[in-house]
Image (cartoon, rainbow, N blue to C red; front, side, top):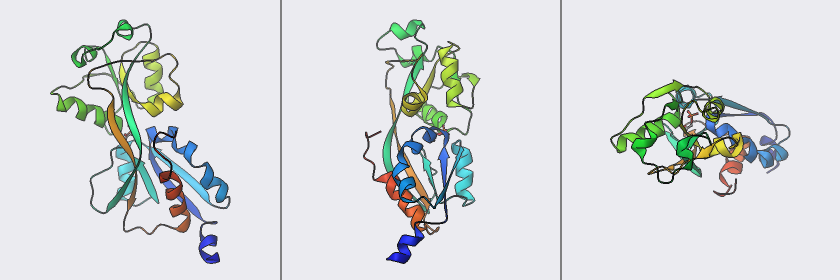
Length: 215
Ligand code: PGA
C-alpha cells in the first residue's frame, strides 16, 4: 500500500557491523540507498565484543557478525561466506614454500587482533581444535594496521578474505598452510523482539538477497 511504501521512504536505519564487515557492506547497500533517498542510514562499527554489547542494549535495527553470540532471541540469517587466510610478507622465506605445516607457521611471530575480536576468536577456535595456540607477538586493534605490519615483515597473521579483497592484497602473500582457510559465514542478526521498520526490512532484504560469491 501507499502507507507501507511511505514507511520505507523516511526515518532512519542503524546497522551494527563488526570491523571486517566494513569492507563489503558498503558495496552491498547501493540498491537500498538508491531506492530510499529519504532514509538516513548509520553504520556503527566495532569489534565482536563491542557489537555484542550493542545487541544486548538493543542499540541498532540489526547487526552483521561472522561469529554471532549464541543467544536465544536472536534471528541469524547467513548470507555470505567468510574465509580467513594466513598471510606473510612476499620476501619472507615461507612465501616461497608450499604445504607449510601449522606448527611451522606458528613458529613465526604472530600479529594478532585484540581479545574481543571475532577474527581472533575464529583463529583461536581453529587452533584449539588441533591442540594448538598462538602467542601474540603484537596485539594490533586494526585489520589495516595488521596488513601493514605484515607487509613490513614484522610477523605473520591470519586475515579475512574481505580484508584482502577490499583492503588490498598488495605486499602480502597468502600462504598454503595446513587446514586453511578457516571457513565461516556472515550472518545478519536481529533481536526477534525488536520490530523492524519497513525501511530496516528493505535494507535486510537488500543485503540477504545477494548471492554468495557475487562480491
Ligand atoms: P572482528 O570481527 O572485527 O571482531 O574481528 C570479525 C568477526 O566477527 O568475524
